[in-house]
Image (cartoon, one colour):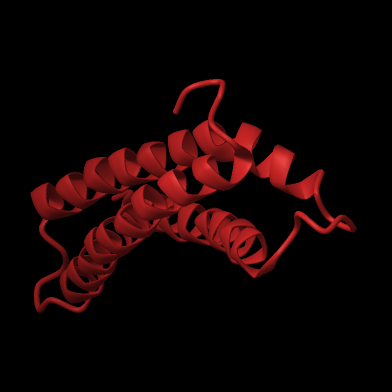
Length: 118
């Protein structure tokens, strides 16, 4: 995105990437949560190496999510600046909502980090 791109163009370009990111990272996070639950209920107790793998993968996923939140913040700030003007529309509102969902995703990932610690 260049400096000359309009805010609508920036939101449109970022939305495509955020949508893909949200789907993929949520899918990977869901798999880690499933793996963790499976390990915790395993007869004989959880396998330490599986917990370690889940821990590190969850840390990586959380870092990707946190980096995405930080990278999108300038665009979100600009979008929030349009609230109350005729430039603010449904697409901007959904973009901010999806950005906010990244915080929930990050919290889920961080909870997996703490739950995977052996």
